[in-house]
Amino acid sequence: MNILFVFTNTLFKLGSWFPLNPNSVSAMVSPSTALFLSLLLYVSFFAFFSQSESKSHLPKVSLELYYESLCPDSVDFIVNHLTKIFSTDLIPIVDLKFVPWGNAKLQPNHTFICQHGPNECFLNTVEACAIDIWPELGKHFQFIYCVEDLVNQQRANDWKSCYETLHLDPEPIKQCYNSKHGKQLELRYAAETDALKPPHKYVPWVVVDGEPLFEDYENFLSYICKAYYKGTDTPKSCSKVSYITEVKAENEHSDCDKGREEPTWRKVSSILSSWLHKMNLGDPI
Ligand SMILES: *[C@@H]1O[C@H](CO)[C@@H](O)[C@H](O)[C@H]1NC(C)=O
Image 1 (cartoon, protein in one colour):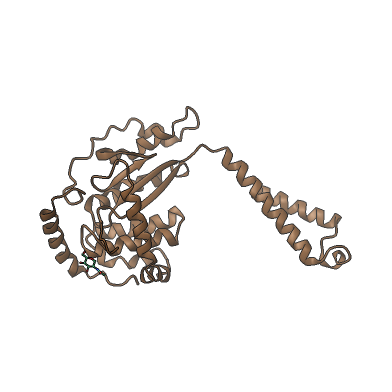
Image 2 (image 1 turned 135 degrees about the vertical axis):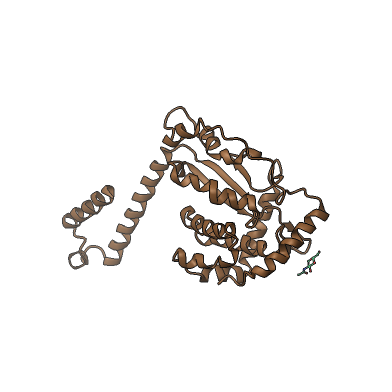
C-alpha cells in the first residue's frame, strides 16, 4: 500500500514536471502513448517487486489430500482435522492441494465407478469443479468444507445450500459439470492418484512434501513443521504442535480401503447406493 502510494505520488510529480496531462502532452506524445507508457512502467514495477518478494521466502511445504467425498474417514479428516490448519499461522507456508478421486475406478471406456456409488462420483466432480473455478484456497476450501460438513451430518442432499451459505454463484459449477469439463478434471485427478509412489492404500491419503503419512495423517501439522524447519523463521504454531503426541489413527478404514475384496466391496457399495439413492442429490444447481 505504501509502495503504491509512493509510486502514484512519484508518477504525479513526474506528470507535473514532464507534462503527462492530455492537453499539454499532445505536442510531444499522444495521450494513448502516454497511457501505454505509464501502464508499461506500472506492470514492470510490480513484476520487479513481486519477484524480489518471492525470493525472500522459503519454498512452501506441499500438503496433498487424496480423498473421496463420501468416505466417512475422508469426511472426518476434512471437517475435524484439516480445518485446524486455518487456526494456525501455517497457511502461508503450505501449498494445500485437494485430489477428489480416491478409490474410484476408471473403466476402459473412460467412465468411472466410485466406491460409494454414483452420488460420490457426482460430489467428487462438483468439488473438482469448485477447485477449478475458485483456485484460491480459501474460496474452494470453504465450499468443500461446507459440502463435507453436510455429508458428515447425513445431510448430503442439502449440499446446494452451500451456494447460499457462502454467497456463491451456482452457474459456474453447473456449467463445469454439464459441459463435461468436470469429467476431464476427474480424469486428471485419476491419473494423479494413479501416479502416487508408493500407491495409496486407503483414503484419506495425506502426503507431505512427497511423503505419505499412512495411518498417522491426523498429525499432519507436525509433519508440515518438520518439513519446513529451517533453523530460523519457524512459524509460531510449530512450537505448539511439535510436542503433540496424539495416538496414531486407528487402523479403521473399512469403508475406504483401496484393496478391498471385490465381493465385500460390491456388497457395501450396493447397501450404500440403495441408501444414497434415497438421498437424490440431483443436478448441480
Ligand atoms: C462402460 O463400461 C462399463 C463396464 O465396462 C459399462 O457398464 C458401461 O455401461 C459403459 N458405459 C458406456 C457409456 O459405454
